[in-house]
Image (tube, rainbow, N blue to C red; front, side, top):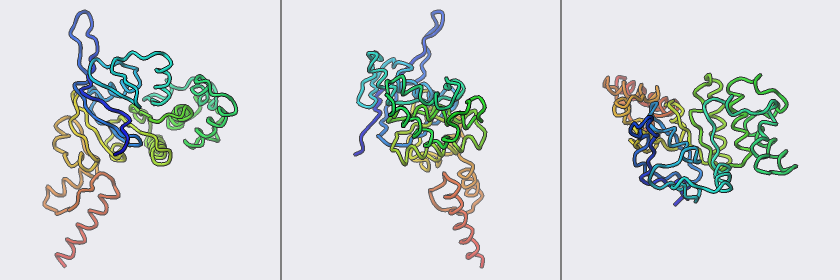
Length: 294
């Protein structure tokens, strides 16, 4: 069995109520394991608790109750010595929604060097890490550019390079494509896939885009602070009516297959998450239909 990198058991978190008001529960008794090297998408509408879950993974927020173990470090009490907290954040990198909030330097290479330099990485190792990280996200030619002159997708890739340069074992993308245009989104998703497939980095992509979630190995749906579904993209998106009941859609290709079946067209098969898989199902269905009438 694969090694578990994240283990949560009955994990809960509540935001403090203001002016004596009751605390507001954001996560309620979440139990799950994420294996080393997995590519997991976490879905949920705004306020479902998915970003709260992300922020618990490197103690931006501290658990209210339950067990949370990340990379062998127990975060349940939320109380880590500074050196252990730094080590944790080196192992679990986070890429947020707005790249402008993560870029700190006036030159791209300085920005990428910022994290590892703070970790005490010496030259020439620092130089090598910066070069490798920029190459990994396809931004080598922008080394001496000013970040504010870059497109949204390019800025986000620089932010990702800054995380990669710290050599994390896991990267959490918290709505990292929400502010990007389709091209920028594609650039970031290609980078995510490469990091997972080629470098074996554990990926947790928190998103509300169904087509993004379809690219993952596993999809977890959080609703109202609890896990509603957990399975492969095909397994989760097959439950279209349940998803719609909690305010989520399915990818367009899965919706098309669903509607064709509703109309009585026998589209057979369970692979409905990606455009390529749906095209194969439709091709098979309509050629069978043609043979039937021929």
